[in-house]
Image (cartoon, rainbow, N blue to C red; front, side, top):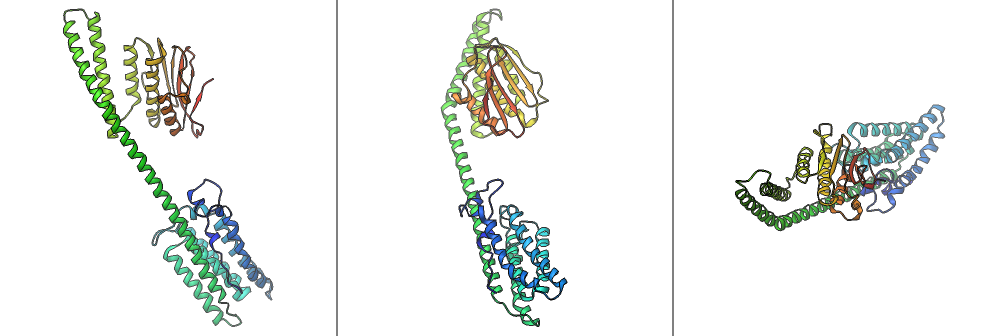
Length: 416
C-alpha cells in the first residue's frame, strides 16, 4: 500500500459566503478549489473498500463498507460543511479550546476512529489507512498538544497492530503518509493563521494612522479657529456692553437695545463654536437631538423665521438620536444661510426626521459639493440610513433622513 497524504489543499478555506482576507492570500485562487483537492485524497480509501467487499462473510462486508464510507463522510463533512468554522475562526493555541468546540471536535474524532475500527474488521491492515484521515482531522479541528497526541497514538497503532495480529501484514507506508499529511496540514494552518494575524495588524496600523490624522486636523482647526473665535467672543462682549450702556435710558424695543441682544447672541454662538472646536480636539464633542432642537428654535426665532418644531423626542430610539441631531443641525444651518425661507417645519418620527422650508428651493445635491451634506451622507450610510434631499411640499427645500433596517444603498439619493 502506498503512503497517503491528504496535504496542503485539505487545509485551505474554500470560497463562498462572506469574503475573508485569509481566503484570498497567500494562495491566490487555491482556496476556491481547496475542498475539491482535499476530497481527491479519498481515492486512497478505495483499497480498504475493495478489501471490505472481498470479505468472506456477508456481515463483515457490510460492516467494512459502512466503516470506510463513514471515514470518508466525516472527512468530507469537515472540509465541505465546517470549513469556515474551523479555518476562519483562527488557530487555537496550546491549552485553548479547539476551533469547533471541544465536544464537537471530540465527537467527530471518536466517530471517525469507530469507523476505522469497523473497516479493519473486514479489510484488516488495509483499514488502517483511515487513521491517516483521523490524523488530518485532528490537526484540522483540534490542533495543539491534543492533536499531536492523537497523531502519535495513530502512528503507534499503525506500527503495532499489523505486527501483533495474526494474518495482518505490515504497511509502514501508512505511517509515512500519516506523518507527512499531519505535518503538511499543520504547516498550512499555521500559514493561514499568521496571514490572518498579519492582516489584523495591518488594519490596526491603518486605524491608528487615520486616528492620528484626525487628531492632527483637529489640532490644526483649533489653532486656526480657536484664536479667531476667542477674539470674536471678546469683541462681541465689548460691543454688547457699549450698546447696553448707550441704550440704558431707551425702551427695550429701540434699535440699540435690540442690537445689544443680537450681539449677545453672537457672543454666545462664538463661545459655543469655540467649545465645539476644543471638544473636537479632546474627543469629547457630543451632539444631542434635544439640544439641537432647542438651538434650532433659538436661531430660527432670532432670524424671524416661523418654526414648527416637535416638543419632545422620546419616540426616537437612543441609537438614532445623534444622527438625527446632526441632520437637524445641518438643515437649520442651510435654512439660515441659503434658503431665504420664512417658515420651517421639522417632523420627527422614530425612524425618520424631515426638515422642510418654503425658501428658494433645493440646494446642491450631496454629490454636488456641500461639505455638510457630504458628511451627513457618510454618517447616514454608517448608521444604515438614507439621506434624502429635494424639493419640499412647502415649496422650498427638504432634507430628510430615514433609518432602514438592512439599508445597503449608496447612503444618499434625490427625492423626485
